[in-house]
Image 1 (cartoon, rainbow, N blue to C red):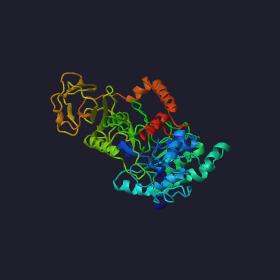
Image 2 (tube, rainbow, N blue to C red; image 1 turned 90 degrees about the horizontal axis):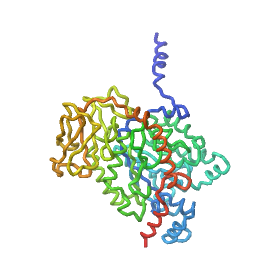
Image 3 (cartoon, rainbow, N blue to C red; image 1 turned 30 degrees about the vertical axis):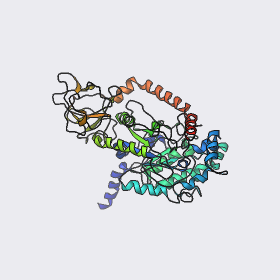
Image 4 (cartoon, rainbow, N blue to C red; image 1 turned 30 degrees about the horizontal axis):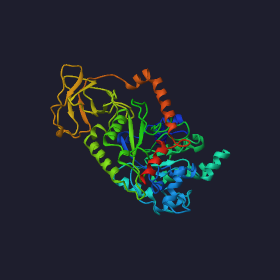
Length: 503
């Protein structure tokens, strides 16, 4: 009977093999690897040739040579000799650091020795190093997941411009698609953060074909995650995690995993030489953004732009250190958490949750159910009233409820006899609190509840959510790139401020 065993075993295991087809229904059905949701927070590093002039933002070349903005031309004339071209700035680039690295931005300069970018990569000119490999080795040595940002298009590549003009696909066939294969096969990124997609549909970029290969055959098929910028009109609809737009902050739970991508410098993604302290997010602002994001089921990707040497400037370093210290104290409420059945009680109280025993729950669930004995609730209090009394209408009590301050052994007294939680922090010396910016409460054995926030949202806010998304998209385009792309806050105001800074 041995000749029958192999076919039977083969048939038994065959259904377990997931084969993803090059269509969005199939691609969207792939579950995200668990590590991404558990991570919650990542660092984005916009670092490239644009870090050398460090003027305006990472769109320097576009405003200088694309739009011929007079203020950019004056900057180049003042700081660089006659005959300077954008390629000249690459010769000063060096250094490396951080999480999701811009392997190639819209100017097309690759930080690896791409076979399709001769003499316009970090090995042929500039640092003469494979910076993607250097980043990969350094980040992975610290047990951090390593990812790559990749711009699908190049602003001024003649093949791309010709494709647009003549409705061809030469740029994708000979440059963009081969480069995607290069970074996956060569560096095994666990995140592929696509951008620069807005000029053409996903069919032009061969996005569905690439993602099917990535999920089925690539060396990272089991662990890679991707975003949603794979063609015009695709963002917020298809891909892995959804980004919708930069600085996305829905304020309520979404049905799919999403990411809030924002930048530490409020005005630019790349390093700026005229950065002011007031342009940098404060610790309180960072905490607020993280808490709002993870309470609604998202991850936060924080961009930091190193200077041309790869160095993180002191004010960025200080802010990241402060933020890291706060996160370490409150790590149990952040890493590996899920959204709770309620996301917030007003603008200053936000919730996450953990499950003691999650063996019967789907790892891809967007929220934890509330069970008295199995669910731990965390309440992020972003503003402590002077009187010290704080109400949590969404948290219902049992006779076993325990409230403590995360990062301390302090048990918090609360009013008994009511149905919802009301605590009093007035008797706790502020010196005993781990932070004066915010406090995180750990709430155990709260009452069981069968609220489903996704059903509640679908029933009452579906039309509102659609309107908000449309309004966000419209407002975003008013302050965005020339024809789409990386979002800007009032560019002319920024350049004017930079000009004032050098006088």
